Image 1 (cartoon, protein in one colour):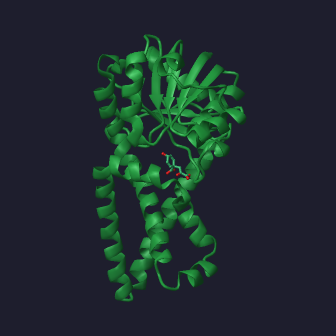
Image 2 (cartoon, protein in one colour):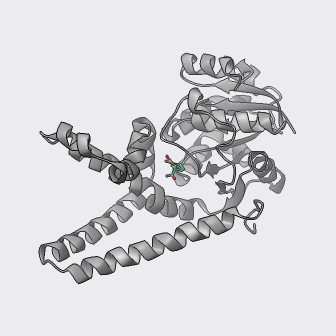
Image 3 (cartoon, rainbow, N blue to C red):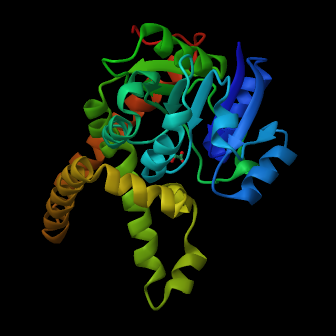
Amino acid sequence: MLNKVVIFGVGLIGGSFARALKQAGMVGSVVGMGRSTASLARAQELGIIDVIGSDMGQALQGADLVLLAAPVAQTEAILSALAPHLQPGTVVTDAGSTKSDVVAAAQRALGAKLAQFVPGHPIAGRETNGPDAAIADLYIGKKVVLTPLPENSAADVETVAAAWRACHAIIHRLSAEEHDKVFAAVSHLPHLLAYALVDDIANKPHADLLFQYAASGFRDFTRIAGSSPEMWRDISLANQTALLTELDAYLAQLTGLRARLAAGDGAALEGIYSNAQRARHQWISAIEAAEQPPAQDQAE
Ligand SMILES: O=C(O)C(=O)C[C@]1(C(=O)O)C=C[C@@H](O)C=C1
């Protein structure tokens, strides 16, 4: 049970965390902090948070857990502001989609209090944001990747893991570097590609005609281009190196596909499409199989 939880950023991610903890009866009171007074007021109106925090010292007083759920570029500023008020016994975690930059920011901002920061990343989201998008079941059956620091105590890591488990998430662990490589490939690159495709179509002189006929294939491929541009700008830059590596690999794939298309090499195209179709079927089957039994943590 967490008596007091402080959440920076009460949108989809932070707001859903608060809602899930409340639904689980895991939290006494939730204090919301953030840049947008309108969002904080709305979160309070919706019952997501109990109190709007204005004074950092007061907000952190007696807090068991602090969650940073603001765009990753704000991590260092938030941690620097809270560091002087951070008391022993308070555990800080985050929900950032990148981890190496977050760890570096925490090292700079927290200094001797670094041990109290347990980095994390819930692998859940939608293309909508803001407090109105927050739902209690966002994390059910979803993975949360923790990238604990050597400085963290096992008890603090467990505090964070237990909070996410109360949201019915499944805990995994990776190093920050592994995490950033993996998510560059399967999350950050797809977002960049979706934005690129929609931007490309939108900039064509006959865009209206194209959008008029775009159907479910286009909708499925580009759903994530409806996500927050600010959040994805920050993620792209924070994970620049790994994202560039994945983008280069993808460009090479496209160049190869282009050559085969230009050569009219149907067999080669079909070979690539078949390989992708097989891999996708296997991936979907594995997800469905994992969803069957009750949620279990990955062997930690
Ligand atoms: O489903 C979406 O809309 C998401 O963008 C979710 C998604 C993802 O890429 O899968 C995006 C960012 C988060 O860090 C984790 C999950």
